[in-house]
Every structure is written in structure tokens, then in C-alpha cells.
Amino acid sequence: MKDDELIAEIEGQLAFQVKWKRIMSGAYFTTAALGIGTSAAATVMAGAGDSLGASILAGGATALFGLEKALLFREKWTHHLNSAMQLEALKIEHQYGGLDGAKTSQRFAEILTTYAIRLPIAAQEKPKE
Image: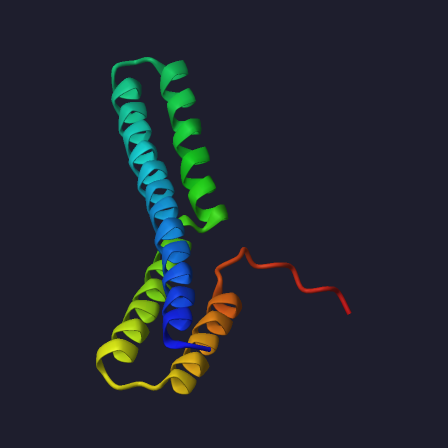
């Protein structure tokens, strides 16, 4: 594979990681901020005597925090961030650090394999024996 093609492959994967890093970052910070806001509002409403409004907001906060935990937004955000930084470092090392094409290709494949293996997913129940 020619150097230009290899760099193009790395940049394509880097663009993918950056896109998903932004999506997961937005999802994490949005659910966390909304969860904190609805939880605080529920506390204020309960203090003001509006038990129905407080319980609705508390339920909403619980749902938001549960959604974030179940979908692992924070973990996926950090995973994409780490993968993007590894790819960026590989690109720089190839272009400016004297890493040859064969070694770059090998490390690129390792980064992609590691990405796939370590992608955060919800724990599955172990089958009963």
C-alpha cells in the first residue's frame, strides 16, 4: 500500500472516530445535564409542596440517568477519544517519526482490532450451565 493510500485510510478511520466521539460526548453531557437539572427541579418542587410535579421530575431524572448508564455514553465517548488519539499519534509518527509503511500498517491493524474488542457494550448474562 502506498503512503498516500495508507494515510488516507488512517484519516478515514480518524474521521469516523472523531464523529462518534462527538456524538457520544453530546449524548453523555446532554443526558447528564438534563438528569441533574430534573433532579434539582424535583427537589425544589417537593420542597414547595408539589408532590405530583416532583415525582414526575424525579422519574424523568431516574430515566435519564438509567439511559446514560444502560447505553454507556461516557464509556463510549472515552473509547472513541482514545481510539482517535491513537490514530492521530500513528499518523504523526508515520509522517514525521520515520515509521515505515509496513510497521504503520501493522499498528493500524492493531488499533482497529483493539477498537473492536474493547468497544463498550452492556454486560450480558452468562448462560446457565
